[in-house]
Image (cartoon, rainbow, N blue to C red; front, side, top):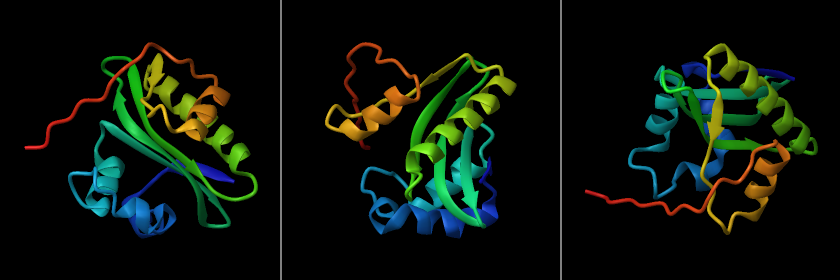
Length: 139
């Protein structure tokens, strides 16, 4: 298992890993390809991939606010029989990445109805902080 920063050349494999449902999400303001590419190429974002035998088995991505001392965890995903192990290993590697960037806090938002996702974040040692509402205005 190799966990590393994604490169632009990984984009086709990442999009295939995401699946068509994720790639055609209506809540993204740009195409999936442009959205993911921005996470790979923008220095204020991160996109780590977990590879086994050259095939993506997991991803972790989000925004890096290292000048403010925190990282926003956008999404962590894994597939296969060893899904939980992959997620744990990716998160450990993500913590190493964050420490190198002097990040002191990792945060994220999860919809209340996403029970499995909440369980994953709790298993990673993350703590629930307050009650929040997500607001958006499309223009």
